[in-house]
Amino acid sequence: MNVAGMCNLRDVKRYAAVILLLCVLCCDRAYGQGGILIRHPKRDTSYIKDYYKNHLVIRAFESTKYNNFRYREHAEKLIYKPNEHNNLGIGFNYRFISLNLGLYFPFLDKNRDIYGKTKYLDLQTHVYLQKFIIDLYAQFYKGYYLANASNALNNYQEGQVVKRPDMATGDVSIVFQYIFNDKRFSYNAAFYQNERQKKSAGSFLVGGGIYHSNARGDSALIPSNIKYTNFFNNNPFTFSNNNSFGFNAGYAYTLVIKKNFFITASLCGGAGLGHSALSNASLDEKTAKFGAEFNLTERFAAGYNSDNYFAGITYIRLVTEDNTAVPNTWQEVNTGNFRFTVAKRFKLKKALIPKNEMIKSE
Image (cartoon, rainbow, N blue to C red):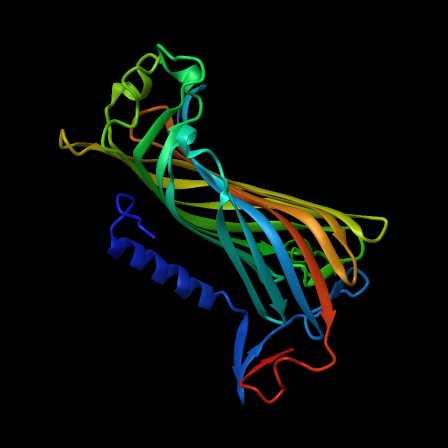
């Protein structure tokens, strides 16, 4: 996929290598005689039923990923959005293995004549290890439009879509959370379908994250005909960059209704420290400073979950807000995905991975 203008090939390879390494390190593993032992901690069976050992889970899904950028000063803001589209996909779970393959179909795309064309590389991985959650984002988009042009611009004509095909963004984030009540509360039941929450339960969460985001354009990212007075001190920057880290805490809960219906919701927020820079390549000007960082992770799922079938929706959203180099201004990144999933569990008479294989599961 052509990601020229978003970042150079060396950057993409570097980010991909980091994400791959973290995925490997995320495995809850221990080394023992005969190979790798993948630990599967015991749960409270009166609250959680698992389908790890004897079931193959097959799923079909429809998903939408998104990555929105905002520049904000007090209540005034610019909202840039890519031309989002849906993906159709299939996947499976068996023991410690989980794989999803999503495909883009042109007939699901929005009208490019209206919103323009968006090129992107979007990698989102959400690892649920019973005691831990690890969210990995590596997103590179090129081609945006101004979603609130009617409120933000002078001389706006009704129905006009202000496109920014030159605007490119990069977002690499790693978020970690610890689940205190993992024996009675299951994220896997709602998001991976290899468990079922039998009774209502919740858990406190605590964690942290590392965040990077940038945006660039061939011309100023703040339009010259903006109606906000002295917005970002009228700085005609063409590049913005933020690097930050922060801590978070929150709570998650699953409500089970009539045995097989469920609603899962969690909210985890926090704050930290970041370094922000605004620059203009043509003027060779740059301003930078340290400032506050705020973050929010939302998860929601609802649907039907029985021993044999699963049908439901899942929604994951990460919001990061960094104080920029201009006082009282912020750069916000809103990213995540929405998915509708239908899954079937097949009970196996014979293990797909023999017990004498190098990788064992308990």
